[in-house]
Image (cartoon, rainbow, N blue to C red):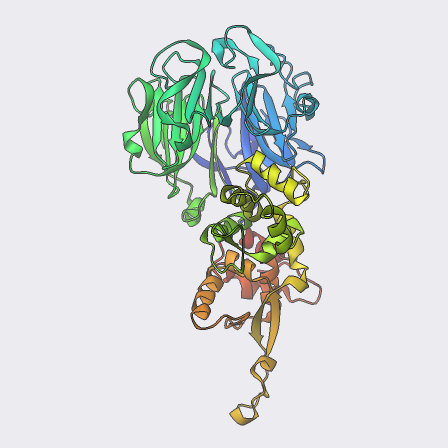
Length: 606
């Protein structure tokens, strides 16, 4: 796999001649020349003129591309880890895990509103936005619309800033613009917008509704009427907030995906995917039988990706189709993927889609599959070795993982959380989601749990799941399982009367059982078979691979990397592990193959 093989683009790249092999419109997906695309976490497109986009490289490195200029590189302080990046026309805002906000802006073009961080020169440096720290606000999420920004703080408090043209801030008629964030309301659970949109959506917990405000010239807010300037939030018709997966809006249409994967459109008839004007969200017939998992909107077009990794698009095509004369496609059409992507069509949550003003991107997210593996393990509750909770409300868990993440024993956790005033099952589950896969579904409840356990909140940026599991690899004392690997012995006596004790013919690799269960389909199947007969703390490996190769594979399950010592044979390791993804049924094919490729390059292996 080459470094540039996972990022493809299509559209008008006249202003981005340095990132693709051609210099004008690309009629089909074309391989990008951006390097090290396996480290890309997200691509964010900014303004249409001058065209620019930002590439987020894991964990906190950024690359900025604008026209034909040499790319710029940025990096946040080492103690800050990026959580998300959003943009509108002339400002990028970066949210870190610590709840802080950073800004990268173009002051020469952002003349309408002196927006947060826009006092810097043209995209020269990333600057911290101190407003939220000064007000003691922990920012949970950010979205941006045209000349506006929206911030969900301290769990459920909504703030907004920027232009209030068309009422897009949802604060009434009393202001034309707000350079600094102003309070809007509380009990907000999710926020949605689009960088080209003059509208804004948010979900409230009480009542369970989706609200919208801003420009509604074409009915794109879905509120059941056409009012060009909707200054106060109005409930969206026929939609419950708890049913929504995501909403994305553009200048004249909006698209909504619910948790069932159904796709709804409203607004301008040529861009909403329906071909008819709609002032409420209406199910798009062509996608009725499809479960959509991703959504991206540009100024005049929409892309969606289904659970089966089928790509559909509509609106003004900008080279999404084999021939392109900016012809309008009113209804969703299936779009072919590059041939390189076909081997990943069975992968879930790996293909990413982005709509920019001129360019659409398609790339593979080489993410750490560890999080997904542990999420599945948590939801299955298989092979758990203890329980936490009160009588009748216990939840099965994996002891080693709990103690690794909290640095507390199970008994300590049980006493602190379920002692005099026990927390309920919902709060326990909320805490365990953070333990297993770093999800914070209820910030306030998680903070309460951390207080009871006397842990620092919010979690330190150094206290990540990935780091904790890598550290666990070194903890031999807590390893509770053995893999037995047969020793090659040409002089072994086959006479059963002289046969040595069985375990003397094997070397052992010690491991945490939950790691094998989470990361390998083969070991899960083996445990199912063994558990039908006996409860054991060991299992035999029948692959005939060397113990060196198996040790490297086991370490990879903890660390997601392959590193050889000076006394290991790289050719033997590469040969023996070339089929490991398929044989051991590992989910992270992309990263594992990339690690083997690094070894081949390092030692010049064929």
